Length: 161
Image (tube, rainbow, N blue to C red; front, side, top):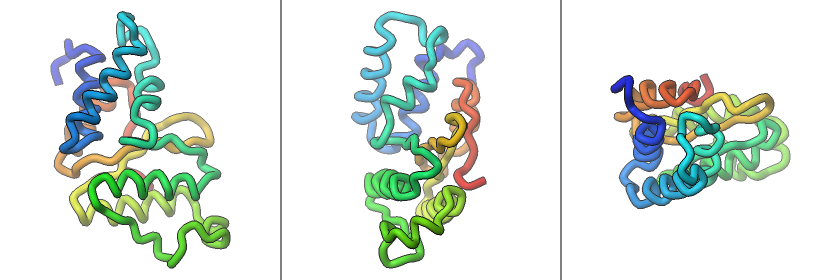
């Protein structure tokens, strides 16, 4: 990665990666990012927080760790963008009994393992105490993610790890 790459250029590259094959979504999110910047330098604002807001529930998730149902819904929605479905190992993943037993780590590992079989990677990043955040990319973009995210100050890792 070019050491002189601007934060905006890095955000654009990240948006392309978290919207595989959907440049329109990346453009829309980048436009929203720039609109909130309103002429400010992306280096001087909370680019990560802003990025989270522009991708949430479309290309990423930001969920309380104590909300396994919301995590299942959001990951299912991300997977559905690419005509994929996650088998959570139960007939009804919204069942209260299943949700009471489900841990965030287990759910993330299940989703990560299944998405890998289809050529995708589910990533998570530090979003604060009690929160889990992440996105989905093509597995072929893993190396790019490992370069771009840290350049933006995002501590990213494969989900469930």
